[in-house]
Image (tube, rainbow, N blue to C red; front, side, top):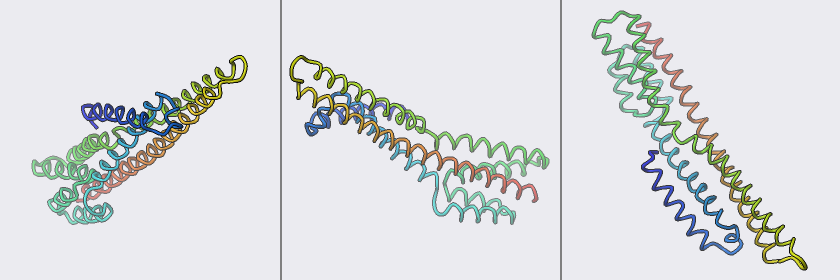
Length: 235
């Protein structure tokens, strides 16, 4: 997600969070203005999650990835480079983009009459460069999710601390404690803690899920690239 898109999304999240806080039930409203920041982090987590789901879905391309890999290896093994390149273009996923770049480099340099060793080295380099272009797109915003998970936990703790300060202040007054201020402090502590932990848990689970998906993609690219290179080398 580009910064010029993230900035207006963040502003909208802050405005929506403030509106929700102002119109929330009294026991939630008593969580205080810190809830606006907590809700903003919650909405940003959902935004990053939706964006990552869309990106990873597109990265999978069209159809079954294992079926595509099987078709690709069969075409390369048969020496049908044009068919293999066409299959990559039709599949359209990140894996297909990487392998397709390598096959096009191999085909072009073969036509130029390069020696076999140089030909394979250039093909390997083309695969690595294509992978280097695809990976950042898959890993984008994962650090943001990790940061939100950490900050949301501390934000919840901060809300708890502020609420407890309010509660102890109400209890420290001479005579009978101010029951209203005491209840307000406890509500502020508990509501902020609940929101902070909910956001942190959600962000952590999503971060681990997306990281696993990206690692799986990288492993599949490395495995398929190696197999394609082996098939090309034996031609």
